[in-house]
Amino acid sequence: MFRTTALATAAAALMAFPMAASADDIVDTAIANGNFTTLIAAVQAAGLEETLRGDGPFTVFAPTDEAFAALPEGTVEALLADIEALTAILTYHVVPMQVTSMDLSEDTPAATVNGEALTFDLSDGVRINDTALVTLADVQTSNGVIHVIDAVLIP
Image (cartoon, rainbow, N blue to C red; front, side, top):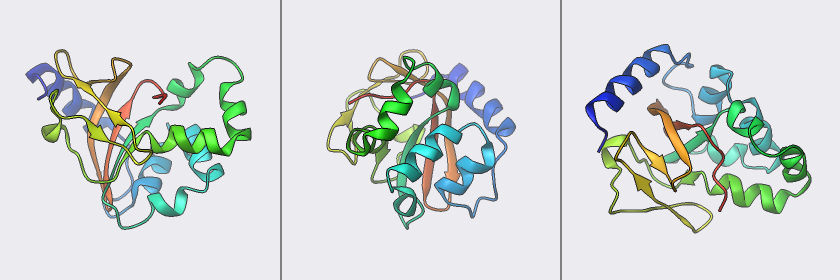
């Protein structure tokens, strides 16, 4: 589970997270925040917006615009031109159930929509696949939860 300092950091960040009303779905919550324009554009390009507006529950490990900008130059454009690859990456960020920070365990990987599993290291905050750090956990939406991450996960 989270260490005390990680919980305090996440709680402080959550209070600063400009969100839409709690009745909003994952897509509307991400749009209202303003830091996920690349993710939303990718979700729309891949035809996944309607799914992420569905009943769920879903857990989305959401890379910020900064996370997408950190990819090698031309990567986002190439993915937007290759919908199959884009869909594989986006569905690797989604777990088809609600997983809160209290549910995470180093012993239990989370199966993603694309069929591959995410692993977690909880020794200093929450790191996914030894790559992405959860910078804000447990953003509740009407159809699931968003965990903000600082890197794009590649299956």
